[in-house]
Image (tube, rainbow over all chains, first blue to last red; front, side, top):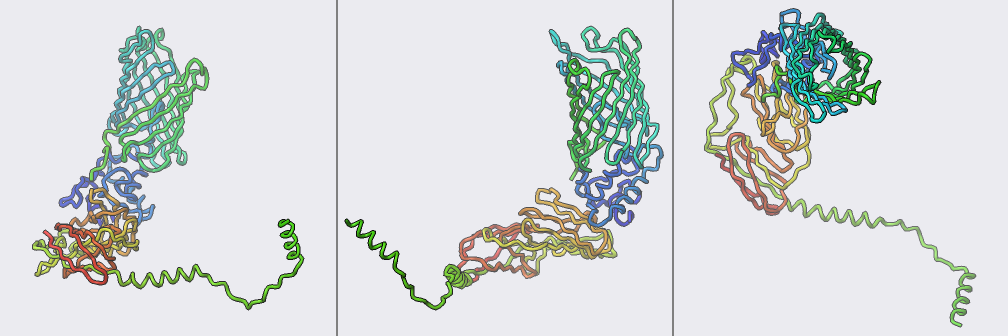
Length: 318
Length: 249
């Protein structure tokens, strides 16, 4: 059936290259593993069932939900997955929605802006660039801009952070993923003005995620180790996230809550995430980090992000 | 003194037995219904006589295009198909033009059925009422798709018909011109004019008829997928067919 139906536009070999194309958009190259392994089966099934507009793509892709059964549609998704012949790419089924604080395990190609406002009016805006390296690794650089309250208020670039992450395990069915990573904090921020720590940090971490029914469970454990213990405090960080989508559309609302711990400080961060385009290539999240101990000293911290998956199309072509 | 006398008379009446004469049973006549039926009966007869019809012929000096060369699914579609964008006979009489009488409303109809057969949509041009459904079906053992688009290009739906015999219904939306196309056979084209105004499509002889038009002055406009015509004013007189012709360019 691939040859008789799908290959009319997507080509027999899945490349989307046709000698005499009958559609005006160039279909995705299904042999490009970087593109075709990044999203979950549910997105592909939705694209076949509802057509391109179901996932924010071209309406020239028709919907098959009135002519094929869900099992038949799943069979086509399995066939499409087979066009990526390289082994070792983590399944898109383990690419869960990003929590605000917990580092997700799946390696991404994303650009993010993460604003945070503390109760004492300290403002931090982090620009974050994540780039996938090969099949299972990711490089990340974070540039924080910090504004510290005082007389006068001090603002400037905070300590830069570079990271490496590698996925050591990923299972497509009963989706589960585990990654190891290392953050390195560079002490470039002005310590006297309160913009930096004055010492480098090395921060090894482990991130893991799994689906529990329709719920996303994501966890991260990290240790912050200062190079100069006089200037920086060793910290044990643990984060956990539980959330679920409100529909299967890529631009759906996702509701979740995080448990965030740093040494003895514990917070809960209820949050909501929303895809801003039909493809979900742009998304945003907002949450409130509410301390559950030492409440008066710490106060509520408003957190969130705006993300751009830069390999995904922002919007469909006609 | 007068008041005492009146009270005395009332007292006498109260004590007396008043005899009411017995009458045979007479059914109560529902006069309201009788009047309503008379109004309906009397009202219907003159109304039937008051409507008229509009007839005419659509012509053009444009010529039909050359047949489409088919390179896909030739075993089903054939090696060439007529280009139905302009269907005109030797006398210049044009088919598939839609004449729309603005201001005379028609009641909602059923589904509009589109058939994919031998790699063409049939009928090429149809009328539909707003908020109805398009039901698309296929007789060909090959993959067709039916994509419906508004004039702006916005897609209303696009459904796959991978095997013959399927019937898929989708809402058509509000008034306007809906373009049908098939993503696997790019020459396939169909049009659905969605309107609640009275309308008619010209036949192979270029003729059209709009029946049951009340007397009055109206604007009559004409739509064609490739040609244009100028709207015309028309005055319809009771009981007398009105003829009007269009020349499209």
